[in-house]
Image (cartoon, rainbow, N blue to C red; front, top):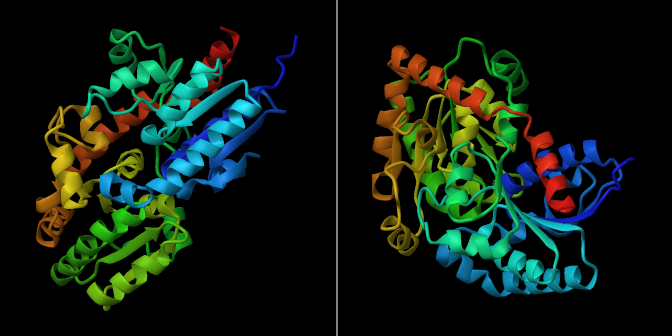
Length: 381
Protein backbone atom coordinates (compact mmCIF):
# COMPACT_ATOMS: atom_id res chain seq x y z
CA UNK A 1 0.00 0.00 0.00
CA UNK A 2 1.15 3.55 -0.74
CA UNK A 3 1.73 5.73 2.31
CA UNK A 4 -0.69 8.62 2.49
CA UNK A 5 1.11 11.95 2.30
CA UNK A 6 1.00 13.72 5.65
CA UNK A 7 0.36 17.39 6.28
CA UNK A 8 3.21 18.80 8.34
CA UNK A 9 4.08 22.10 9.94
CA UNK A 10 7.67 23.31 10.12
CA UNK A 11 9.41 26.32 11.68
CA UNK A 12 12.90 27.46 10.69
CA UNK A 13 14.18 30.62 12.30
CA UNK A 14 17.12 31.87 10.23
CA UNK A 15 19.17 31.29 7.08
CA UNK A 16 20.87 28.11 8.35
CA UNK A 17 17.51 26.68 9.46
CA UNK A 18 16.00 27.50 6.08
CA UNK A 19 18.89 25.65 4.44
CA UNK A 20 18.31 22.58 6.62
CA UNK A 21 14.56 22.83 6.09
CA UNK A 22 14.91 22.95 2.32
CA UNK A 23 17.11 19.86 2.29
CA UNK A 24 14.75 18.04 4.69
CA UNK A 25 11.69 18.89 2.57
CA UNK A 26 13.44 17.54 -0.52
CA UNK A 27 13.82 14.17 1.22
CA UNK A 28 10.28 14.21 2.52
CA UNK A 29 8.92 14.92 -0.95
CA UNK A 30 10.80 11.95 -2.34
CA UNK A 31 8.89 9.78 0.11
CA UNK A 32 5.59 11.67 -0.12
CA UNK A 33 5.32 13.60 -3.42
CA UNK A 34 1.94 15.05 -2.36
CA UNK A 35 3.30 16.31 0.97
CA UNK A 36 1.76 19.52 2.33
CA UNK A 37 3.97 21.65 4.56
CA UNK A 38 3.47 25.11 6.02
CA UNK A 39 4.63 27.35 8.87
CA UNK A 40 7.69 29.61 9.06
CA UNK A 41 10.52 29.33 6.57
CA UNK A 42 12.61 31.00 3.91
CA UNK A 43 13.35 30.81 0.18
CA UNK A 44 15.03 27.39 0.20
CA UNK A 45 11.98 25.86 1.87
CA UNK A 46 9.65 27.76 -0.46
CA UNK A 47 11.51 26.24 -3.41
CA UNK A 48 10.32 22.84 -2.12
CA UNK A 49 6.68 23.93 -2.14
CA UNK A 50 6.61 25.12 1.46
CA UNK A 51 3.86 27.59 2.37
CA UNK A 52 5.52 30.24 4.57
CA UNK A 53 2.92 31.97 6.72
CA UNK A 54 5.72 34.14 8.13
CA UNK A 55 9.24 34.64 6.71
CA UNK A 56 12.09 33.03 8.64
CA UNK A 57 13.95 36.30 9.18
CA UNK A 58 11.26 37.38 11.66
CA UNK A 59 12.87 34.96 14.13
CA UNK A 60 16.48 35.70 13.20
CA UNK A 61 17.79 37.15 16.45
CA UNK A 62 20.76 36.21 18.59
CA UNK A 63 21.42 36.67 22.27
CA UNK A 64 19.35 38.07 25.09
CA UNK A 65 19.61 41.71 24.08
CA UNK A 66 18.58 41.19 20.47
CA UNK A 67 15.75 38.89 21.56
CA UNK A 68 14.43 41.46 24.05
CA UNK A 69 14.31 44.12 21.36
CA UNK A 70 12.05 41.90 19.22
CA UNK A 71 10.28 40.00 21.99
CA UNK A 72 6.78 41.37 21.50
CA UNK A 73 6.71 40.59 17.79
CA UNK A 74 8.20 37.11 18.24
CA UNK A 75 5.77 36.17 21.02
CA UNK A 76 2.90 37.42 18.90
CA UNK A 77 3.98 35.24 15.98
CA UNK A 78 4.35 32.18 18.22
CA UNK A 79 0.91 32.72 19.78
CA UNK A 80 -0.77 33.16 16.39
CA UNK A 81 0.99 30.12 14.93
CA UNK A 82 0.11 27.94 17.91
CA UNK A 83 -3.55 28.91 17.71
CA UNK A 84 -3.64 28.19 14.00
CA UNK A 85 -2.08 24.75 14.41
CA UNK A 86 -4.33 23.80 17.32
CA UNK A 87 -7.39 24.84 15.31
CA UNK A 88 -6.29 22.73 12.31
CA UNK A 89 -3.75 20.17 13.58
CA UNK A 90 -1.06 18.81 11.27
CA UNK A 91 0.11 15.19 11.48
CA UNK A 92 3.33 16.43 13.06
CA UNK A 93 5.21 19.60 13.88
CA UNK A 94 8.92 19.81 13.06
CA UNK A 95 10.93 22.54 14.77
CA UNK A 96 14.14 23.20 12.88
CA UNK A 97 16.70 24.53 15.36
CA UNK A 98 15.52 27.90 16.87
CA UNK A 99 15.05 26.17 20.26
CA UNK A 100 14.04 29.29 22.20
CA UNK A 101 11.10 29.76 19.85
CA UNK A 102 10.29 26.15 19.02
CA UNK A 103 10.44 24.34 22.36
CA UNK A 104 7.57 26.27 23.95
CA UNK A 105 5.50 25.77 20.82
CA UNK A 106 6.40 22.08 20.61
CA UNK A 107 5.42 21.52 24.24
CA UNK A 108 2.04 23.13 23.66
CA UNK A 109 1.38 21.05 20.55
CA UNK A 110 2.65 17.85 22.15
CA UNK A 111 0.27 18.35 25.08
CA UNK A 112 -2.57 18.59 22.55
CA UNK A 113 -1.60 15.24 21.00
CA UNK A 114 0.30 16.55 17.96
CA UNK A 115 3.53 14.68 17.26
CA UNK A 116 6.51 16.94 17.96
CA UNK A 117 9.88 16.44 16.27
CA UNK A 118 12.94 18.64 16.69
CA UNK A 119 15.51 18.72 13.91
CA UNK A 120 18.97 19.57 15.26
CA UNK A 121 19.90 18.65 18.79
CA UNK A 122 20.63 21.80 20.80
CA UNK A 123 24.29 21.96 21.75
CA UNK A 124 23.79 20.59 25.27
CA UNK A 125 27.28 19.11 24.91
CA UNK A 126 28.70 22.64 24.60
CA UNK A 127 26.72 24.77 27.05
CA UNK A 128 23.42 24.95 28.96
CA UNK A 129 23.21 21.21 29.63
CA UNK A 130 20.08 21.84 31.70
CA UNK A 131 18.14 22.29 28.45
CA UNK A 132 17.85 18.51 28.26
CA UNK A 133 14.83 18.76 30.57
CA UNK A 134 13.11 21.18 28.21
CA UNK A 135 13.87 18.91 25.26
CA UNK A 136 12.30 15.94 27.03
CA UNK A 137 9.15 17.92 27.86
CA UNK A 138 8.80 19.41 24.39
CA UNK A 139 9.50 16.76 21.81
CA UNK A 140 8.66 13.18 20.88
CA UNK A 141 11.83 12.68 18.84
CA UNK A 142 15.06 14.50 18.00
CA UNK A 143 16.85 14.25 14.67
CA UNK A 144 20.57 14.63 15.38
CA UNK A 145 23.20 15.97 13.02
CA UNK A 146 26.23 14.60 14.86
CA UNK A 147 26.97 10.96 15.75
CA UNK A 148 27.65 11.49 19.48
CA UNK A 149 24.31 13.20 20.21
CA UNK A 150 21.76 10.32 20.36
CA UNK A 151 23.64 8.63 23.21
CA UNK A 152 23.61 11.87 25.22
CA UNK A 153 19.87 12.23 24.71
CA UNK A 154 19.23 8.56 25.49
CA UNK A 155 20.77 9.09 28.92
CA UNK A 156 17.98 11.58 29.56
CA UNK A 157 15.27 9.30 28.17
CA UNK A 158 14.80 11.23 24.92
CA UNK A 159 14.27 9.23 21.69
CA UNK A 160 16.64 10.36 18.98
CA UNK A 161 18.09 9.33 15.63
CA UNK A 162 21.43 10.20 14.04
CA UNK A 163 20.66 11.33 10.50
CA UNK A 164 23.98 12.90 9.53
CA UNK A 165 24.31 16.42 8.23
CA UNK A 166 22.49 17.29 4.99
CA UNK A 167 25.24 19.69 3.97
CA UNK A 168 27.65 16.76 3.84
CA UNK A 169 25.44 15.21 1.17
CA UNK A 170 25.16 18.27 -1.05
CA UNK A 171 28.71 19.61 -0.76
CA UNK A 172 31.03 17.51 -2.95
CA UNK A 173 33.95 15.69 -1.37
CA UNK A 174 36.23 17.48 -3.83
CA UNK A 175 35.27 21.19 -3.86
CA UNK A 176 34.77 22.71 -7.36
CA UNK A 177 37.40 25.41 -6.90
CA UNK A 178 38.04 26.20 -10.58
CA UNK A 179 34.35 26.39 -11.46
CA UNK A 180 33.62 28.62 -8.48
CA UNK A 181 36.48 30.96 -9.34
CA UNK A 182 35.26 31.20 -12.90
CA UNK A 183 31.77 32.06 -11.70
CA UNK A 184 33.08 34.78 -9.38
CA UNK A 185 35.59 36.20 -11.86
CA UNK A 186 38.65 35.08 -9.89
CA UNK A 187 41.88 33.88 -11.48
CA UNK A 188 43.23 30.36 -11.01
CA UNK A 189 46.53 31.51 -9.55
CA UNK A 190 45.18 34.23 -7.25
CA UNK A 191 45.23 33.98 -3.46
CA UNK A 192 41.66 34.43 -2.23
CA UNK A 193 40.32 34.96 1.27
CA UNK A 194 36.60 34.65 2.02
CA UNK A 195 35.12 36.83 4.77
CA UNK A 196 31.93 35.39 6.29
CA UNK A 197 30.54 37.71 8.98
CA UNK A 198 27.36 35.74 9.70
CA UNK A 199 23.74 35.76 8.61
CA UNK A 200 22.11 37.80 11.39
CA UNK A 201 21.92 41.58 11.66
CA UNK A 202 23.52 41.42 15.11
CA UNK A 203 26.44 39.37 13.72
CA UNK A 204 26.99 41.91 10.95
CA UNK A 205 27.05 44.69 13.53
CA UNK A 206 29.65 43.01 15.74
CA UNK A 207 31.74 40.85 13.40
CA UNK A 208 31.89 42.45 9.95
CA UNK A 209 34.01 45.37 11.19
CA UNK A 210 36.93 43.35 12.63
CA UNK A 211 36.88 41.04 9.60
CA UNK A 212 37.18 43.99 7.23
CA UNK A 213 39.90 45.59 9.33
CA UNK A 214 41.78 42.29 9.43
CA UNK A 215 41.53 42.02 5.65
CA UNK A 216 43.12 45.46 5.30
CA UNK A 217 46.00 44.38 7.55
CA UNK A 218 46.47 41.16 5.58
CA UNK A 219 46.52 43.07 2.29
CA UNK A 220 49.32 45.30 3.57
CA UNK A 221 51.48 42.20 4.09
CA UNK A 222 50.27 40.46 0.93
CA UNK A 223 49.07 43.11 -1.56
CA UNK A 224 48.17 40.40 -4.07
CA UNK A 225 45.35 39.01 -1.90
CA UNK A 226 41.79 39.20 -3.16
CA UNK A 227 38.83 39.11 -0.80
CA UNK A 228 35.21 38.04 -1.25
CA UNK A 229 32.41 38.59 1.25
CA UNK A 230 29.09 36.81 0.76
CA UNK A 231 26.25 38.76 2.37
CA UNK A 232 22.81 37.36 3.12
CA UNK A 233 20.33 38.92 0.66
CA UNK A 234 18.71 41.90 2.30
CA UNK A 235 21.68 42.79 4.51
CA UNK A 236 23.81 44.55 1.89
CA UNK A 237 22.63 47.91 3.22
CA UNK A 238 24.23 47.09 6.57
CA UNK A 239 27.52 45.92 5.08
CA UNK A 240 28.20 48.53 2.40
CA UNK A 241 28.67 51.48 4.84
CA UNK A 242 31.08 49.34 6.87
CA UNK A 243 33.13 48.61 3.76
CA UNK A 244 33.25 52.29 2.82
CA UNK A 245 34.35 53.19 6.35
CA UNK A 246 36.86 50.44 7.18
CA UNK A 247 38.09 49.06 3.85
CA UNK A 248 37.42 51.56 1.05
CA UNK A 249 40.50 50.57 -0.99
CA UNK A 250 40.44 46.82 -0.31
CA UNK A 251 40.30 44.46 -3.30
CA UNK A 252 36.95 43.13 -2.09
CA UNK A 253 33.97 41.71 -3.94
CA UNK A 254 30.64 41.77 -2.10
CA UNK A 255 28.46 38.84 -3.09
CA UNK A 256 24.69 38.63 -2.82
CA UNK A 257 24.53 35.31 -0.98
CA UNK A 258 26.74 32.78 -2.81
CA UNK A 259 28.49 31.66 0.37
CA UNK A 260 29.11 28.20 -1.08
CA UNK A 261 30.71 29.66 -4.19
CA UNK A 262 32.90 31.86 -1.98
CA UNK A 263 34.02 28.90 0.14
CA UNK A 264 34.68 26.73 -2.91
CA UNK A 265 36.72 29.50 -4.53
CA UNK A 266 38.81 30.68 -1.58
CA UNK A 267 42.09 29.43 -0.14
CA UNK A 268 41.22 30.29 3.47
CA UNK A 269 38.32 31.95 5.26
CA UNK A 270 37.75 34.21 8.25
CA UNK A 271 34.34 33.02 9.39
CA UNK A 272 31.79 33.73 12.11
CA UNK A 273 31.15 30.82 14.47
CA UNK A 274 28.09 28.80 13.51
CA UNK A 275 26.95 26.57 10.67
CA UNK A 276 29.29 28.38 8.29
CA UNK A 277 32.29 26.85 10.09
CA UNK A 278 31.00 23.39 9.25
CA UNK A 279 30.38 24.48 5.66
CA UNK A 280 33.96 25.74 5.49
CA UNK A 281 35.22 22.38 6.78
CA UNK A 282 33.12 20.48 4.24
CA UNK A 283 34.63 22.67 1.52
CA UNK A 284 38.05 21.73 3.03
CA UNK A 285 39.00 25.33 3.70
CA UNK A 286 41.35 26.24 6.57
CA UNK A 287 39.70 28.92 8.66
CA UNK A 288 39.93 31.36 11.51
CA UNK A 289 36.75 31.31 13.58
CA UNK A 290 35.61 34.70 14.85
CA UNK A 291 32.83 35.77 17.16
CA UNK A 292 31.70 38.86 18.98
CA UNK A 293 28.39 39.71 20.58
CA UNK A 294 26.93 42.21 22.98
CA UNK A 295 28.93 42.31 26.23
CA UNK A 296 25.86 41.36 28.27
CA UNK A 297 25.22 38.31 26.09
CA UNK A 298 28.85 37.25 26.39
CA UNK A 299 28.76 37.62 30.16
CA UNK A 300 25.62 35.47 30.32
CA UNK A 301 27.00 32.57 28.28
CA UNK A 302 30.73 32.44 28.89
CA UNK A 303 30.40 30.72 32.28
CA UNK A 304 28.08 28.06 30.85
CA UNK A 305 30.52 26.61 28.33
CA UNK A 306 31.18 22.93 28.91
CA UNK A 307 34.19 22.47 26.63
CA UNK A 308 36.97 24.64 25.25
CA UNK A 309 35.72 24.66 21.63
CA UNK A 310 32.81 26.45 20.02
CA UNK A 311 33.62 25.90 16.33
CA UNK A 312 32.00 22.78 14.90
CA UNK A 313 35.17 21.47 13.18
CA UNK A 314 36.95 21.63 16.53
CA UNK A 315 34.01 20.09 18.41
CA UNK A 316 33.93 17.14 16.00
CA UNK A 317 37.69 16.66 16.22
CA UNK A 318 37.85 17.13 19.99
CA UNK A 319 40.82 19.47 19.58
CA UNK A 320 41.77 22.82 18.12
CA UNK A 321 42.17 22.06 14.43
CA UNK A 322 41.56 25.73 13.64
CA UNK A 323 41.97 28.85 15.80
CA UNK A 324 39.02 30.48 17.56
CA UNK A 325 39.07 34.19 18.36
CA UNK A 326 36.11 35.07 20.57
CA UNK A 327 34.92 38.36 22.02
CA UNK A 328 37.93 40.37 23.34
CA UNK A 329 40.32 38.10 21.40
CA UNK A 330 38.48 38.85 18.16
CA UNK A 331 40.68 41.77 17.12
CA UNK A 332 41.72 42.75 13.60
CA UNK A 333 45.37 42.15 14.48
CA UNK A 334 44.76 38.63 15.80
CA UNK A 335 42.50 37.72 12.88
CA UNK A 336 45.08 38.96 10.37
CA UNK A 337 47.91 37.15 12.15
CA UNK A 338 46.06 33.80 12.18
CA UNK A 339 44.88 34.21 8.61
CA UNK A 340 48.38 34.90 7.33
CA UNK A 341 49.68 31.95 9.36
CA UNK A 342 47.50 29.60 7.29
CA UNK A 343 48.81 31.09 4.06
CA UNK A 344 52.42 30.72 5.23
CA UNK A 345 52.20 27.05 6.31
CA UNK A 346 51.20 24.58 3.54
CA UNK A 347 51.87 21.51 5.73
CA UNK A 348 49.49 22.79 8.39
CA UNK A 349 46.87 23.50 5.72
CA UNK A 350 47.20 19.96 4.35
CA UNK A 351 46.79 18.42 7.82
CA UNK A 352 43.62 20.44 8.46
CA UNK A 353 42.22 19.49 5.06
CA UNK A 354 42.79 15.80 5.82
CA UNK A 355 40.84 16.18 9.08
CA UNK A 356 38.00 17.95 7.28
CA UNK A 357 37.84 15.11 4.74
CA UNK A 358 37.42 12.54 7.51
CA UNK A 359 34.67 14.63 9.09
CA UNK A 360 32.90 14.90 5.74
CA UNK A 361 32.83 11.12 5.33
CA UNK A 362 31.43 10.67 8.85
CA UNK A 363 28.60 13.15 8.32
CA UNK A 364 27.68 12.03 4.80
CA UNK A 365 24.94 9.42 5.15
CA UNK A 366 21.93 10.49 3.04
CA UNK A 367 20.39 12.70 5.70
CA UNK A 368 17.21 13.45 3.77
CA UNK A 369 16.28 9.76 3.50
CA UNK A 370 17.30 8.96 7.08
CA UNK A 371 15.31 11.90 8.42
CA UNK A 372 12.26 10.98 6.35
CA UNK A 373 12.45 7.38 7.62
CA UNK A 374 12.69 8.57 11.21
CA UNK A 375 9.76 10.97 10.77
CA UNK A 376 7.68 8.18 9.21
CA UNK A 377 8.39 5.96 12.24
CA UNK A 378 7.29 8.73 14.61
CA UNK A 379 4.08 9.21 12.64
CA UNK A 380 3.40 5.47 12.75
CA UNK A 381 4.10 5.11 16.48
